Length: 259
Length: 379
Image: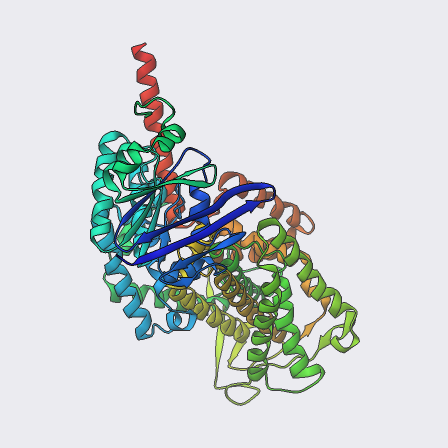
């Protein structure tokens, strides 16, 4: 049995009277691509936010590499090895593409004021390593020619790619992609699918939220389905496709592909 | 502006560039001795005005770190300036007689500590709230001083210590003559000399040199810090605090660092101001000055260190240059600010990247207009 890198245990999250997540339990194995799907408002992004420390769970536990990360500061969680992208792109618009990725790479660095001021060896080493890694990631994403462009000036697709590069730069073990294909055309989606596989092949574990069923079925190893904050199914893509509860909840009663 | 000239300058070999900078610095140092006709101020002592300008430059650089880089609106910056000035005043004259060179570092540290004390609880609030809290801070410092006998209250503190002289008083190591610009002739004025390096009451030139040196040092430090992890963290925090936090930037720590660094520079400026004036009272630290400092940063172009220097120069220099207009000068100054805000909302010298983003936006607009025109033509 492969080792679980992230375990979500009985996670419940309430906003006042509204229960956004109700007793959700699942885990992600090291090196797999797990799809998290569900209709709009099912609690997918809320689940992401709980894992990355944006929301504090009402009850339940989240273990990352065996240790609880509940209550840790957001940047601490990132430094431990969970990185994410955003559903609506949130780059640093007035910084260049390269600088955006460098901010990610800085997560594992410790250069402070004085080290930078006196240009101590640590500053130079981290700066060089960060640049090398950032350029490598930009090349990996195919946007290295736009390294000096402002993030705001990149095309929509490149901005999405840059977000993934920035997340990867924090040197995570688990990378959470929140609807990375939103707004993509079918050809771009196929390209992205291959890219996500390549990300995994580099040794990252991927948690993927996605609406597009074709993409999810094509790329994931396992799928967790949420509806109204509860987990209704879990299994391989083939199992999920044939699961009547999922078909009813997610695809509608009609068995035709909803998209 | 003149991009042709700019690209020519940037393509010069490095030694030439360094030489140009050195010459510019030398010119800046020599400015009060040269007293060039149009630039010099007919109605007030040119060296004193230049000293004020360099203090404003220092303040603007410090405030730029807080407002321009980290995006924290600070309306009470004069508070740190006051803390620096009063620490120096108390230690060198009012309650002790420390040497100035020891008092200034203490003043700077005091300002920095007050920055951390103010920042630790307040930097958790954002935007407008932070502005209000800092506004209150600036006023609190002034009111506390005004009502505390131990701090001189409204009478203020005089006889503040001066930097140690280099060379023996009264003549110093040597004398530097000023230039005198007569009717079409330039003369060396041997009666009006600056003694190197005597810090006296009558001559502000040595103080100007000290302040200018401080500006240059801070400018270098600013550059080194901006191009590092710290600078990037500030910028990321300014752009999107939540995203920055999720990318592993400890935003609170870096905001506090920005606040402390800004306070450091503000305290330094206050200390230098106190020693040159030799007398301070609460009137020197009105809310108005916080606003003027902020105006310098915004007018110049927040986030661009050269921009804020120009802003500081304008804010400090223009009212002195046009002192002859009496009360109208304030009106003219206000009008100039309004005009600037309308014509160049990004500041006189906005950060290069803002300019680039704007240009692209404009190009896109033009393209769209072109496409729209075609469509209508086709229709």
